[in-house]
Length: 338
Ligand code: PBG
Image (cartoon, rainbow, N blue to C red; front, side, top):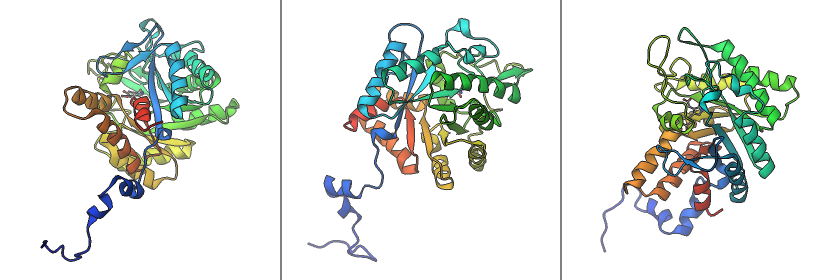
């Protein structure tokens, strides 16, 4: 048998370590386990499960369904749930005042999870958009999202969530100084153990589209000066990468225990840079649009659903993420043989 010489190292064959499953497993550089997953769930105030059209296979959960999900997470070894509320229109206003109401859906959802499975961590989104009638994450004046006025409301919302029993507060609003303000308010009220996972590098992304469906926050404004149609004055420009490092550095200095990059797959370079540059756990959010893309292609028979779910999640581990927020969490955990 003759073979072409593999110059300059005739004995170097990369395929040797790929020849069988046992050796592939042995030399695998990263592993994905259920402990890497944070299950993002949308909760609503009605009964039963309400499918989200733009997110096939995803439903808004009632409070009892959410309790069941918490028990399922525990059984599957998923460490935590991230809760997002679908708020009824009657509770929305320009200021998002209902966000800090101690009887609101989020407060009841946290209590239900803690009651059903106290071992499962609860992460609450700190942001006003589910509660504002305009869908922005802050207080608006003449078309400007006011930073300080918004931070004040975020602090009220976060304190309510901490009192309700949330383990982790995850500010997703991108106002300046909100992590420091939250930390200070938490300490002042004795919530010293409540953790902050900041959405530190959050981009003004088109990939959040289906989420707006899921939480019913409608279409953003008309695009007029008074009514901005995007979040570009507070979320990051998708073209930027150094800016992400500055955002993360600031959030850590202000007291964030963990940071997040969002969206996930289109921003894997940012996940890698952040996780290399800072010694804090870095998470990635596989957002609604990423979920929708994979599911739409799979439903057309264009992608092998189970394969791409696990492959997309493994990519985050390879990039250095400590874990991933994902709507696929229970499915992935089951596939991983939990
Ligand atoms: C709100 C918030 C958003 C998401 C999580 N929190 C949307 C946005 O900022 O417009 C997106 C989640 C997803 O798309 O899965 N502050």
